[in-house]
Length: 100
Image (cartoon, rainbow, N blue to C red; front, side, top):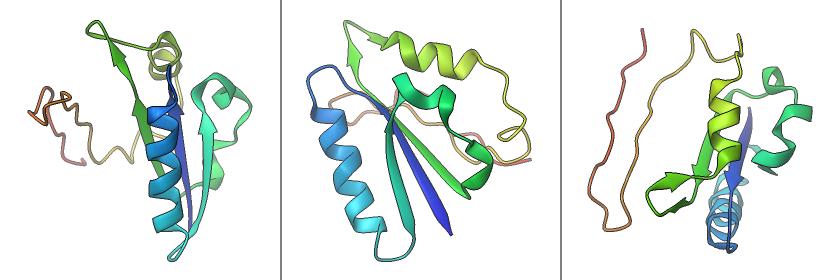
């Protein structure tokens, strides 16, 4: 099984967290960590699991996340399991969506 962690980071914290998660996942599966700014060149079809981490500044995600999410991608359509936003204090800011 192969996993991809995409991230956007302004000050390096999200990158550090993504790398830490990847180091823990390496025990169970191959895991790549890629900046969202380079996501267009990635073949998402080669991954069985994809995680996205993004920083929030002044209430807004990095523009790279917005662009990535608005780009149509058939790879994701039948497989989206969860989408969850969390505030820095840990409170749930979004919703979790169950798979179809």
